[in-house]
Length: 109
Image 1 (cartoon, one colour):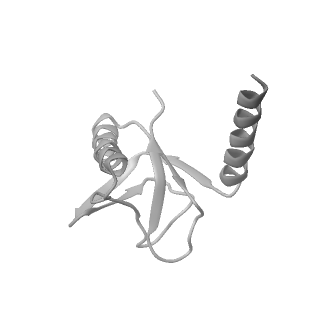
Image 2 (cartoon, one colour; image 1 turned 60 degrees about the vertical axis):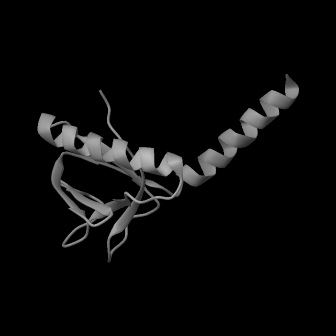
């Protein structure tokens, strides 16, 4: 039991350390722009990116989990846009230039 508790604590600390550097952004979907094997999108009233920047994720991830995640994220974006429900993205940081690859995408219900 002590080993399990130690592992859980170590994982919690590691996740806390990485999430302290991350940015979370929430908003209604403004635009979805699929091109080749990449899905670009913008959020309304975004506080992280501006101008011609987009968030993006790749549809051609070679891992099985990556392929399922990308398909689910795309579905979540489209359904969020159709239902006018905000989505949230996690990014490593808000860049001042260039497009920003997301770490993951989710929606509160």
